[in-house]
Every structure is written in C-alpha cells, then in structure tokens.
Amino acid sequence: MAIHSTEPPKAGHERASARERASAARELQRKRDSRRRMLIIGGICGALVAVVAVMVILYATKSEKKVATSSLAPAAAVKSVTTVAASTYDKVDTSKVVAGPKKVSGSALTFNGKPGIYYQGAEYCPFCAAERWPLVVALSRFGTFSNLSQTVSGAAPEPYPATPTFSFVASSYSSPYLAFQAVETQTNQKKNGQYTPLQTPTAAQEAIIAKYGSGSVPFLDFGNKYTIEGASYSSAPLVGKSFDEIAAAVADPNSEVGKSVLGTANLMTAMICDVTGGKPGSVCNDSTITKLRSILNAEK
Image (tube, rainbow, N blue to C red; front, side, top):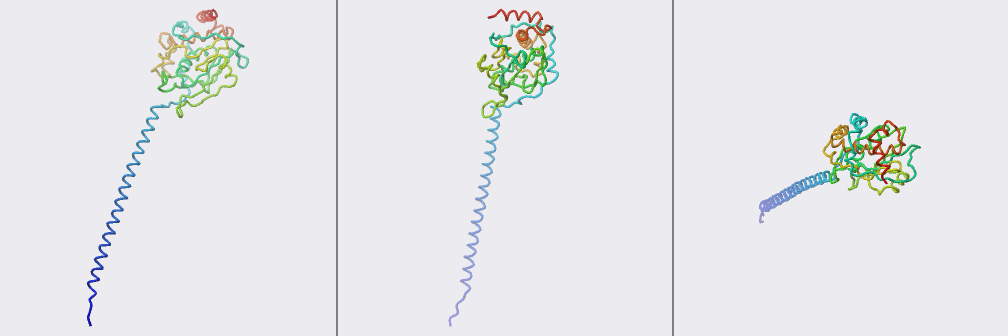
C-alpha cells in the first residue's frame, strides 16, 4: 500500500495563510493611513473656515464700526455747559452761524399749556450732534435738564464721524417758562446696514414735521414761530475732540468751539425769548439778546 505524506500540503496551507494575513495587515494599514490623511485634511479645512470666519467678522466690524449708543454724561461736563456765565455770552457774535432760522406762522405750539420747543434728530446724525450743543446751552438759560446722556454720531463713512455730543434719550427738562420735547429716531449702531430704530414720534409730533419740515434732521420748531433744519454751524471745530474737551471749550468765548456753540446758542435764546414773551427778563433783556430779537423780528 502506498503511503502518502500530508506534510507538504500543510506547509503550503500555512504559507497561503501567512500571505493572507500579510495582505489583510497591509489593507488595514492602508485604511488607517487613509483615515489619518482625511483627518488631517479635515482639520486643515476646519482651520481655514475658522480663519475665514474671523476675517469676515473683522471686516464687518471695520466697515460697520459699532459704538455705544449712549451713557450718562459726566456731571462736571454738564455743569460746564449748562452754567455758562451771562457775561460770556456777550463776548461772542453770530458770525459762525452759517444757516439761520426760518420764520413760520401757525397756531402757537404748546406742550401742557406752556410754549413749546420741539427737537427731532437721530444719534447717528453728525449735524444733530453739532446742533445739540447750543440747544442744551440755550435751553439751560430757561430751565434745567436731568439725566442728559453723552453719545457720538455714526462712524465713517458718515461726515464728521464719531462727533461727541449729547443725547436726549431718557433725559427730562423742566422750566417755568416753556416745555421741551425731543425725539431721537435712530441709534448710532447699524444692523443689516441700517441704523436701528430708537424712538417713534407721536402723531402730534409727526404733524409738526409734516407741516414745517422736509423730513431732514436735525429739525427744531420754536413755538411755531421759527424752525431750523440742518446744522446751524460747521461741525469742524468739534472734530478730534473728546466730549469733555468740547464741554470745556464751550465756556471759552475765544475758542472756535465757544464761538460756534455760544453764537448759535445766543440766536436760539433770542428765538426762545420770542416764544416765551420775553421771559425771564434776566435773560431776554440782555443787550445781546435784545439786539438779536430785533434782527429776527425785522426779517420777513
């Protein structure tokens, strides 16, 4: 009987199994290497996305710079602006006033039975920023403000960007001679490319604008006797100065700020005196104000 050996087939089988294991190991390593490459590529892509996102945010912040809408004005600065010495007003003229008031006619504007002064503006508006300074100065000769805020006008590309100024939002005003109402329609901050809404005029306030204004800001109505639309003087002297620096310069009749703000405030004071019937005499009988009232009343 022939005897057949089983050893060679066993060796061949082991060699085949070794080859299969080696092939499987190579395939596993290939898959691991592939996953590692994908993770590296994914990490790089994620980092690139993050970098692009940061760049977009930085660009948006740069092109649409945001500023705080308002904060309580420093007490020392408010006092400096609202307590200008009577003799200081007489040291300036109205030569810096580039846009005078317009005389209008109609039923007397009153708020709660008192002669009324109405202001409408917006916090982003650089010309409103300029106009608020003399308005606060003039009205402070007839009454008292509380909780005045400080803010800045809109960022570039607005003209005279970030001009320091007051905001009438949340403030109040009391006077035995007149009543003052103010509306700031928009903030100095943008959302989706537009300045965000702030305050909404009442129907009565909208009627004032409809009758005497064009829709531009700043707008001022002095008892339905005089109106001002736009800035009364150039904002140039305010550029590059802080809120405190402007407040300090207002009381200096020799500074460009003082000449511009106090000169405009004198003209506003004369208009207010016409609205209040010359009250109080301590303000309205001043020689500078009397002269300005005569000029105003002589104009058609």
